[in-house]
Image (cartoon, rainbow, N blue to C red; front, side):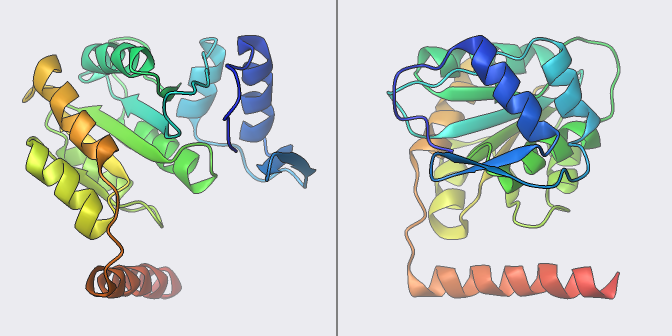
Length: 214
């Protein structure tokens, strides 16, 4: 799903994402492919849609970011989402959308599902410490999440470990530091050296073996 042209209309984007969340079709190579609907995305995605999700595409960056938070991370998430849009990123905000108490695994699942389904390239999750979100996200196949409260870990985690989800503790970092960490995370690329690829293959085998043993 590559938005390389001008920004798409919000209403059209909302309809497209709704259909995707219901499994009505996939988008491959810019063409819609109809298929049998699978199970719905997590409740957090539906919550995002019901709150008139704004999905915009920008030319400045080619990275699509899914962001989610629980009630503790809500305020910082809103600041980060606005900042990312100003920076020119395409942002998929999957909630929560208020300070009412919610359960963080729902939003970890929503962001992880967006990456698995090709709706986002990377994810950002926020809760109080970041620990709970990180634990939940890493239960999902293909999700490599880490709590990073410094810029070195944020870029090194991508370069060596192909980290695709950054997790932040809203009770630990403020907006200024969060922006620096996110910038380091998004600007980094996996370096593809053989030793790092081999380690990732071992992680994938762990996921596969655990899946078979359940």
